[in-house]
Length: 74
Image 1 (tube, one colour):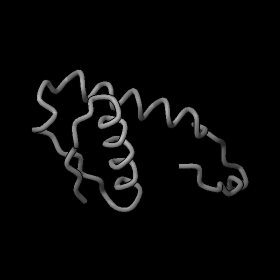
Image 2 (image 1 turned 60 degrees about the vertical axis):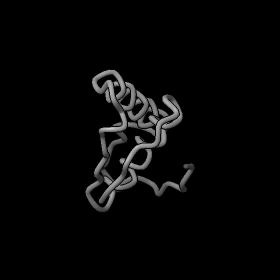
Image 3 (image 1 turned 60 degrees about the horizontal axis):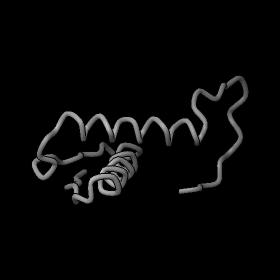
Image 4 (image 1 turned 30 degrees about the vertical axis):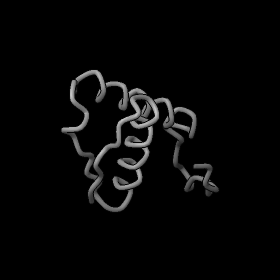
């Protein structure tokens, strides 16, 4: 998931770097797991364009942690 990054626009500030985003997504994945006892009943729906990538990453983290496939949609 290491994608080349472009320099920020003039006057822009970095809010979350790549490592911080990764930690946030893992925490969200854990929250989803903790709040849903039956993961086979959930689906993650990503809104184009960046939401789809986020849903895929969250599903991958949940599948890695719980070994349960997660339904994805757009």
